[in-house]
Image 1 (cartoon, helix red, strand yellow):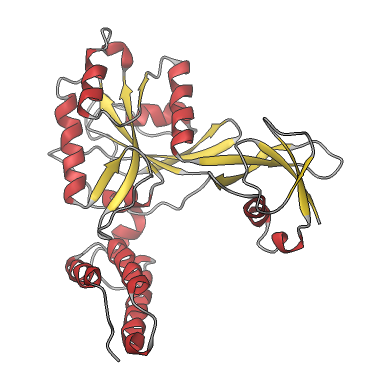
Image 2 (cartoon, rainbow, N blue to C red):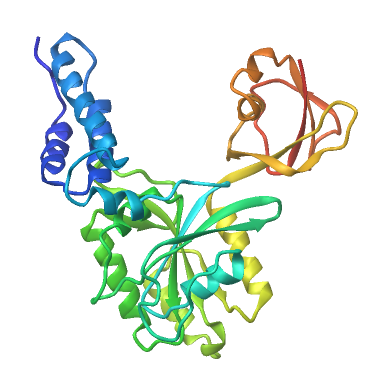
Length: 331
Protein backbone atom coordinates (compact mmCIF):
# COMPACT_ATOMS: atom_id res chain seq x y z
CA UNK A 1 0.00 0.00 0.00
CA UNK A 2 1.47 3.43 -0.95
CA UNK A 3 2.24 5.83 1.87
CA UNK A 4 0.55 8.84 0.15
CA UNK A 5 2.64 11.34 2.07
CA UNK A 6 1.88 15.06 1.47
CA UNK A 7 4.50 17.29 -0.26
CA UNK A 8 5.07 19.19 3.01
CA UNK A 9 6.25 15.94 4.58
CA UNK A 10 9.20 15.64 2.21
CA UNK A 11 10.17 19.31 2.75
CA UNK A 12 10.16 18.84 6.50
CA UNK A 13 12.00 15.51 6.22
CA UNK A 14 14.87 17.23 4.36
CA UNK A 15 15.05 19.93 7.04
CA UNK A 16 14.95 17.23 9.75
CA UNK A 17 17.99 15.48 8.27
CA UNK A 18 19.96 18.74 8.12
CA UNK A 19 19.01 20.00 11.61
CA UNK A 20 21.67 19.64 14.35
CA UNK A 21 19.79 20.97 17.40
CA UNK A 22 18.33 17.88 19.18
CA UNK A 23 15.28 19.71 20.53
CA UNK A 24 14.44 21.16 17.12
CA UNK A 25 14.93 17.72 15.57
CA UNK A 26 12.52 16.33 18.19
CA UNK A 27 9.92 18.97 17.34
CA UNK A 28 10.28 18.16 13.64
CA UNK A 29 10.12 14.40 14.25
CA UNK A 30 6.89 14.73 16.22
CA UNK A 31 5.44 16.90 13.44
CA UNK A 32 6.49 14.35 10.80
CA UNK A 33 4.74 11.60 12.77
CA UNK A 34 1.63 13.74 13.05
CA UNK A 35 1.60 14.36 9.28
CA UNK A 36 1.79 10.65 8.36
CA UNK A 37 -1.52 9.12 7.24
CA UNK A 38 -2.40 6.31 9.63
CA UNK A 39 -2.76 3.13 7.56
CA UNK A 40 -0.84 -0.09 6.82
CA UNK A 41 1.27 1.61 4.15
CA UNK A 42 2.91 3.83 6.79
CA UNK A 43 3.28 1.27 9.60
CA UNK A 44 7.06 0.94 9.10
CA UNK A 45 7.51 4.70 8.69
CA UNK A 46 5.58 5.31 11.90
CA UNK A 47 7.66 2.75 13.79
CA UNK A 48 10.93 4.23 12.49
CA UNK A 49 9.88 7.76 13.43
CA UNK A 50 8.73 6.69 16.90
CA UNK A 51 12.15 5.08 17.38
CA UNK A 52 13.88 8.32 16.34
CA UNK A 53 11.68 10.31 18.70
CA UNK A 54 12.56 7.96 21.57
CA UNK A 55 16.29 8.27 20.85
CA UNK A 56 16.10 12.07 20.65
CA UNK A 57 14.26 12.25 23.97
CA UNK A 58 16.95 10.10 25.60
CA UNK A 59 19.67 12.29 24.11
CA UNK A 60 18.03 15.47 25.37
CA UNK A 61 17.48 13.99 28.82
CA UNK A 62 21.18 13.21 29.03
CA UNK A 63 21.10 9.51 28.23
CA UNK A 64 22.59 9.81 24.75
CA UNK A 65 26.20 10.08 23.64
CA UNK A 66 25.76 12.78 21.03
CA UNK A 67 28.18 15.66 21.09
CA UNK A 68 26.72 18.72 22.81
CA UNK A 69 23.78 16.91 24.42
CA UNK A 70 24.88 17.86 27.93
CA UNK A 71 25.00 21.55 27.06
CA UNK A 72 21.60 21.42 25.37
CA UNK A 73 20.09 19.76 28.44
CA UNK A 74 21.56 22.40 30.73
CA UNK A 75 20.70 25.55 28.87
CA UNK A 76 18.25 25.31 25.97
CA UNK A 77 15.19 24.22 27.94
CA UNK A 78 13.68 25.58 31.15
CA UNK A 79 10.68 23.77 32.61
CA UNK A 80 7.59 25.95 32.55
CA UNK A 81 6.09 27.18 35.79
CA UNK A 82 3.10 29.39 36.50
CA UNK A 83 0.58 30.65 33.97
CA UNK A 84 3.07 31.36 31.20
CA UNK A 85 6.76 31.39 30.33
CA UNK A 86 7.98 34.79 29.10
CA UNK A 87 11.47 35.24 27.68
CA UNK A 88 13.26 38.61 27.67
CA UNK A 89 15.63 39.13 24.73
CA UNK A 90 17.61 42.14 23.56
CA UNK A 91 21.01 43.65 22.76
CA UNK A 92 23.85 44.12 25.31
CA UNK A 93 23.16 46.45 28.27
CA UNK A 94 19.53 47.04 27.26
CA UNK A 95 18.26 46.41 30.82
CA UNK A 96 16.90 42.84 30.63
CA UNK A 97 18.53 41.81 33.90
CA UNK A 98 17.42 44.97 35.71
CA UNK A 99 13.82 44.36 34.66
CA UNK A 100 13.88 40.72 35.76
CA UNK A 101 15.45 41.80 39.04
CA UNK A 102 12.75 44.44 39.58
CA UNK A 103 9.87 42.10 38.73
CA UNK A 104 10.96 38.84 40.37
CA UNK A 105 12.90 37.41 43.30
CA UNK A 106 15.60 36.17 40.92
CA UNK A 107 18.97 37.86 41.32
CA UNK A 108 20.60 38.19 37.91
CA UNK A 109 24.05 39.70 37.61
CA UNK A 110 23.60 43.40 36.84
CA UNK A 111 26.64 45.25 35.53
CA UNK A 112 27.45 48.33 33.48
CA UNK A 113 29.51 46.31 31.03
CA UNK A 114 28.19 44.18 28.14
CA UNK A 115 27.71 40.39 28.23
CA UNK A 116 27.45 40.15 32.03
CA UNK A 117 24.61 37.65 31.58
CA UNK A 118 26.04 34.41 30.19
CA UNK A 119 23.31 31.90 31.05
CA UNK A 120 19.49 32.03 31.15
CA UNK A 121 17.97 32.70 34.56
CA UNK A 122 14.26 32.18 35.41
CA UNK A 123 12.31 34.04 38.08
CA UNK A 124 8.65 34.20 39.12
CA UNK A 125 6.61 37.39 38.87
CA UNK A 126 3.17 37.73 40.47
CA UNK A 127 0.55 39.76 38.66
CA UNK A 128 -2.95 40.04 40.18
CA UNK A 129 -2.95 36.52 41.76
CA UNK A 130 -1.20 34.94 38.73
CA UNK A 131 2.37 33.65 38.66
CA UNK A 132 4.33 34.41 35.48
CA UNK A 133 7.73 32.91 34.74
CA UNK A 134 10.24 35.43 33.35
CA UNK A 135 13.56 34.37 31.83
CA UNK A 136 16.59 36.64 31.67
CA UNK A 137 18.91 35.74 28.77
CA UNK A 138 22.33 36.60 27.34
CA UNK A 139 22.32 39.45 24.82
CA UNK A 140 21.96 38.97 21.07
CA UNK A 141 24.46 40.92 18.99
CA UNK A 142 26.96 40.61 16.15
CA UNK A 143 29.47 39.37 18.75
CA UNK A 144 27.22 36.84 20.49
CA UNK A 145 24.25 34.61 19.77
CA UNK A 146 24.20 31.58 22.03
CA UNK A 147 22.98 28.54 20.07
CA UNK A 148 20.76 27.35 22.94
CA UNK A 149 18.70 30.54 22.63
CA UNK A 150 16.84 29.00 19.68
CA UNK A 151 15.29 26.31 21.87
CA UNK A 152 14.51 28.72 24.70
CA UNK A 153 12.66 31.15 22.43
CA UNK A 154 10.71 28.40 20.65
CA UNK A 155 9.59 26.98 23.98
CA UNK A 156 8.43 30.29 25.49
CA UNK A 157 4.79 31.38 25.47
CA UNK A 158 5.70 35.03 24.92
CA UNK A 159 8.74 37.04 23.83
CA UNK A 160 9.53 40.47 25.28
CA UNK A 161 11.91 42.26 22.91
CA UNK A 162 13.79 44.98 24.80
CA UNK A 163 14.53 48.25 22.98
CA UNK A 164 17.25 50.33 24.66
CA UNK A 165 16.08 53.95 24.44
CA UNK A 166 19.51 55.08 25.60
CA UNK A 167 21.33 53.49 22.65
CA UNK A 168 22.11 55.31 19.41
CA UNK A 169 21.97 51.91 17.69
CA UNK A 170 18.54 51.01 19.06
CA UNK A 171 16.72 50.41 15.76
CA UNK A 172 19.73 48.71 14.19
CA UNK A 173 19.99 46.38 17.19
CA UNK A 174 16.30 45.46 17.06
CA UNK A 175 16.36 44.80 13.33
CA UNK A 176 19.47 42.66 13.70
CA UNK A 177 17.79 40.48 16.35
CA UNK A 178 14.62 40.06 14.28
CA UNK A 179 16.62 39.08 11.18
CA UNK A 180 18.86 36.66 13.08
CA UNK A 181 15.82 34.90 14.49
CA UNK A 182 14.28 34.70 11.01
CA UNK A 183 17.40 32.95 9.77
CA UNK A 184 16.81 30.42 12.53
CA UNK A 185 13.17 30.01 11.44
CA UNK A 186 11.80 31.91 14.46
CA UNK A 187 9.38 34.65 13.41
CA UNK A 188 8.32 37.31 15.92
CA UNK A 189 4.62 38.14 15.57
CA UNK A 190 2.31 40.75 17.10
CA UNK A 191 0.08 38.05 18.64
CA UNK A 192 -0.76 34.35 18.47
CA UNK A 193 -3.56 34.66 15.88
CA UNK A 194 -1.47 33.20 13.04
CA UNK A 195 -0.03 29.72 12.57
CA UNK A 196 2.75 29.09 10.06
CA UNK A 197 1.93 27.14 6.91
CA UNK A 198 5.53 25.94 6.85
CA UNK A 199 5.87 23.56 9.82
CA UNK A 200 9.60 24.30 9.99
CA UNK A 201 8.80 27.82 11.18
CA UNK A 202 8.05 28.86 14.75
CA UNK A 203 5.84 31.94 15.25
CA UNK A 204 6.34 33.58 18.64
CA UNK A 205 3.93 36.24 19.97
CA UNK A 206 5.96 39.30 20.95
CA UNK A 207 5.63 42.64 22.70
CA UNK A 208 8.24 45.41 22.60
CA UNK A 209 9.47 46.93 25.85
CA UNK A 210 10.89 50.41 25.24
CA UNK A 211 13.16 50.52 28.26
CA UNK A 212 14.86 53.47 30.02
CA UNK A 213 11.97 55.75 29.11
CA UNK A 214 13.54 58.80 30.79
CA UNK A 215 16.28 58.73 28.12
CA UNK A 216 13.63 59.57 25.50
CA UNK A 217 12.13 62.78 26.84
CA UNK A 218 10.60 63.93 23.55
CA UNK A 219 9.31 60.47 22.64
CA UNK A 220 11.08 60.49 19.27
CA UNK A 221 12.71 57.10 19.77
CA UNK A 222 9.45 55.46 20.79
CA UNK A 223 7.83 56.97 17.73
CA UNK A 224 10.58 55.46 15.60
CA UNK A 225 9.90 52.02 17.09
CA UNK A 226 6.20 52.24 16.21
CA UNK A 227 7.12 53.26 12.65
CA UNK A 228 9.41 50.26 12.20
CA UNK A 229 7.18 47.80 14.10
CA UNK A 230 3.69 49.29 13.61
CA UNK A 231 1.65 46.23 14.60
CA UNK A 232 3.44 45.30 17.82
CA UNK A 233 2.25 46.32 21.28
CA UNK A 234 4.82 48.55 22.95
CA UNK A 235 5.26 49.43 26.62
CA UNK A 236 7.63 52.16 27.83
CA UNK A 237 9.36 51.25 31.10
CA UNK A 238 11.87 52.35 33.69
CA UNK A 239 12.91 50.54 36.85
CA UNK A 240 12.40 53.95 38.54
CA UNK A 241 8.72 54.04 37.53
CA UNK A 242 6.51 51.53 39.37
CA UNK A 243 3.49 52.37 37.20
CA UNK A 244 5.40 51.44 34.04
CA UNK A 245 6.43 48.10 35.55
CA UNK A 246 2.83 47.35 36.50
CA UNK A 247 1.76 48.22 32.95
CA UNK A 248 4.38 45.82 31.58
CA UNK A 249 3.05 43.03 33.80
CA UNK A 250 -0.53 43.75 32.68
CA UNK A 251 0.50 43.77 29.00
CA UNK A 252 2.38 40.49 29.36
CA UNK A 253 -0.59 38.85 31.03
CA UNK A 254 -3.00 40.06 28.33
CA UNK A 255 -0.63 38.92 25.56
CA UNK A 256 -0.73 35.35 26.92
CA UNK A 257 -4.45 35.15 25.96
CA UNK A 258 -5.42 33.44 29.20
CA UNK A 259 -8.12 33.89 31.82
CA UNK A 260 -8.23 33.38 35.60
CA UNK A 261 -11.02 31.29 37.07
CA UNK A 262 -11.53 31.27 40.84
CA UNK A 263 -13.36 28.51 42.69
CA UNK A 264 -15.45 28.44 45.85
CA UNK A 265 -16.56 25.47 47.94
CA UNK A 266 -20.31 25.32 48.51
CA UNK A 267 -21.22 27.65 51.36
CA UNK A 268 -17.75 29.25 51.54
CA UNK A 269 -15.95 32.29 50.16
CA UNK A 270 -13.98 32.11 46.90
CA UNK A 271 -10.30 31.16 46.92
CA UNK A 272 -8.40 33.99 45.20
CA UNK A 273 -4.94 32.58 45.89
CA UNK A 274 -4.67 29.85 43.27
CA UNK A 275 -6.81 30.49 40.17
CA UNK A 276 -7.34 27.94 37.41
CA UNK A 277 -5.62 29.23 34.27
CA UNK A 278 -7.40 28.61 30.97
CA UNK A 279 -7.02 29.88 27.41
CA UNK A 280 -9.53 32.48 26.30
CA UNK A 281 -12.66 30.57 25.29
CA UNK A 282 -12.26 28.00 28.08
CA UNK A 283 -15.43 26.37 29.41
CA UNK A 284 -16.78 25.14 32.74
CA UNK A 285 -15.71 21.63 31.73
CA UNK A 286 -12.17 22.84 31.02
CA UNK A 287 -12.06 24.42 34.48
CA UNK A 288 -13.26 21.18 36.07
CA UNK A 289 -10.55 19.22 34.23
CA UNK A 290 -8.06 21.84 35.45
CA UNK A 291 -8.86 20.74 39.01
CA UNK A 292 -8.64 17.03 38.22
CA UNK A 293 -8.90 15.06 34.99
CA UNK A 294 -11.73 12.89 36.40
CA UNK A 295 -13.53 15.78 38.07
CA UNK A 296 -15.56 16.71 34.97
CA UNK A 297 -17.10 13.23 34.77
CA UNK A 298 -18.88 13.74 38.09
CA UNK A 299 -19.96 17.32 37.39
CA UNK A 300 -23.74 17.90 37.19
CA UNK A 301 -23.66 21.69 36.90
CA UNK A 302 -21.90 24.76 38.27
CA UNK A 303 -22.93 28.10 39.71
CA UNK A 304 -21.16 31.20 38.53
CA UNK A 305 -20.41 34.69 39.78
CA UNK A 306 -18.79 37.37 37.65
CA UNK A 307 -19.10 40.67 35.84
CA UNK A 308 -22.34 40.90 33.87
CA UNK A 309 -23.76 37.69 35.37
CA UNK A 310 -26.50 36.93 37.86
CA UNK A 311 -24.89 35.90 41.14
CA UNK A 312 -25.12 32.15 41.53
CA UNK A 313 -26.43 31.63 38.00
CA UNK A 314 -26.62 27.91 37.12
CA UNK A 315 -24.50 26.95 34.08
CA UNK A 316 -23.70 23.74 32.23
CA UNK A 317 -20.32 22.25 31.32
CA UNK A 318 -20.13 23.89 27.87
CA UNK A 319 -20.59 27.43 29.23
CA UNK A 320 -17.79 29.76 28.03
CA UNK A 321 -16.02 31.55 30.88
CA UNK A 322 -14.59 35.05 31.22
CA UNK A 323 -11.59 36.36 33.15
CA UNK A 324 -12.09 36.40 36.94
CA UNK A 325 -15.29 34.34 36.89
CA UNK A 326 -15.98 32.44 40.13
CA UNK A 327 -17.25 28.85 39.92
CA UNK A 328 -18.96 26.64 42.45
CA UNK A 329 -19.02 23.03 41.25
CA UNK A 330 -21.92 20.70 42.02
CA UNK A 331 -21.58 16.91 41.70
